[in-house]
Image (cartoon, rainbow, N blue to C red; front, side, top):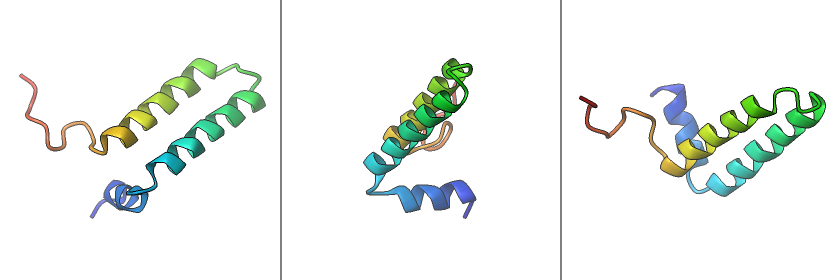
Length: 66
């Protein structure tokens, strides 16, 4: 079992709490850096939240792309 699979299993049923933590962590990072990396932080937050909402990694349980 990969580390990613272990993390997914730990987060099951707690997606809302994890998303709040991701948002709070990103906001804290923006504050500490004075918003210098705001675009990067927002992109990372969105990708993490998309993965949590989807609960599958790209390529898993999806047909191969032509």
